[in-house]
Length: 164
Image (tube, rainbow, N blue to C red; front, side, top):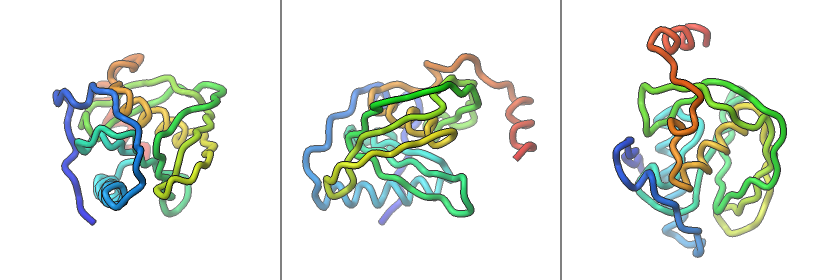
């Protein structure tokens, strides 16, 4: 297990489209374990493989609605349905100290594979749906700052922290 360096905006690999995972092997297991450790250490709700320098279609999202986070590993994820709309603040581990207002679906259904190659579907809503969309965007070379409706001022960010 290990903590990997999170790539920051400006690194051209964040703009590239990731390749599908084709082998469910020890290398994938190590990548996913390291991504889990890295995400937990960064106290984030999502992390995509390109953010740690691996251009493969693998993401981890966290459901933080309960007392302890529940982590979902999504390999080759694809949004198969969405409904509703939510407009709210969004940040990114690759764009520290930048927050924006982003419109996302309220609910999504994601088809993916687990670390062993078994297919499954994840139905997500609220923040988890937002995280799924955000991380899948990373796999397509899209950063949230390119889809933000507007950016938050330092005062708005400070206020957001006080509201928690």
